[in-house]
Image (cartoon, rainbow, N blue to C red; front, side, top):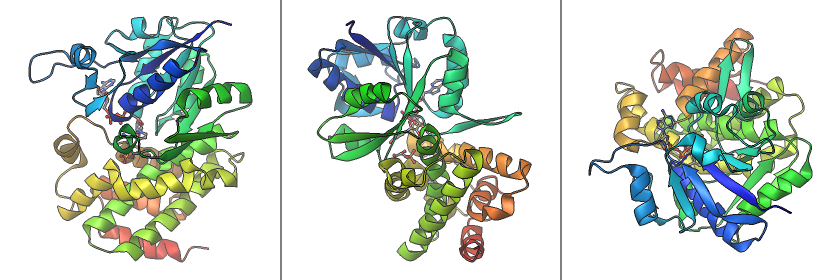
Amino acid sequence: PQKSRVTVVGSGNWGSVAAKLIASNTLNFNSFHDEVRMWVFEETLPSGEKLSEVINRTNENVKYLPGIKLGKNVVADPDLEHAVRDANMLVFVTPHQFMEGICKRLVGKIRKDAQAISLIKGMEVKREGPCMISTLISEILGINCCVLCGANIANEIAVEKFSEATVGYRENKEIAEKWVRLFNTPYFMVSAVQDVEGVELCGTLKNVVALAAGFVDGLDMGNNTKAAIMRIGLREMKAFSKLLFPSVKDNTFFESCGVADLITTCLGGRNRKCADAFARNGGKRSFDELEAEMLQGQKLQGVSTAKEVYEVLSHRGLLQLFPLFSTVHEICSGRLAPSAIVEYTEHSARLP
Ligand code: NAD
Ligand code: 13P
């Protein structure tokens, strides 16, 4: 059988770690070509050099994952069409807001037998309703798309600390197993569940809860309040997921993509960190400003996801059933003070 060729579309913090993980496995398994292409959204560094050239020279993504060697078989490619041309396994891992544009550029440019997986946490809201990123990829490109989410703070996996992840697939278990083989390593333990929407919604929605956790950290509310936020947030994650897709399985929330990702993101994620600073500044500095200052080019997903969730709920007249999700958006958009998270959460705790 023909060897599979892998391209990673995206080269941010998680994208670079994903390329490193994959590149260690393509060397180990004969079923994959050694080389892993990684599409780089090109930028010029302060030194005047192009990021993709520096990655290829140093084998390091000096901007988004400094200090970590990616593996010599990772090749950075700033030309999107060229990067995907020969690949039959496409790994999508960019901030979610850029995916629609990227997919449109790829129409007619990928192999007919290509398969995709999305590592992206986020969704789009269109006039017709919400659209998960894996669905966007499937529909625009006409290809199958699995998802991979989990308790995966990229910088920890970069230094090979143990973690788990969950692949979500639709019906073809063999395809899911191929993705598991591509990602699984002794320090990155991947399992598969037949619940694409459940896995993807867990990864997407926990970013909204992480903002709430950051607000209570910024207000110095302590661990019990934060645990309450996580519990109520998990409950809203489950209710919202089932509202969009009644097929979502309860067990998915107990996988790495569910409660484990919720916990790690509320403890150590970027959404938490920026929301903490937002609350400490009394909401006077915008998230855009804090993101630019604190993340140096990395992107927050929670603020736009909170808005997208709010749009869905308001369209369906269900805002009052999701006080935590609604309040997070109202705080992010400046309509409520950060302290509202506690008042509304108290109300929420009393909901049946
Ligand atoms: P990141 O936050 O580091 O984002 C920056 C990336 O976006 C860079 O590669 C940058 O070049 C690119 N970019 C900027 N403007 C762009 C544009 N106009 N078009 C295309 N690309 C552009 O990225 P990341 O951490 O790799 O996150 C990607 C996805 O993975 C997100 O959905 C995130 O939620 C998810 N994720 C991240 C982590 C993590 O710990 N970083 C863990 C799990 C999942
Ligand atoms: P942040 O984007 O908040 O850093 O979350 C990272 C993540 O998804 C960990 O699994």
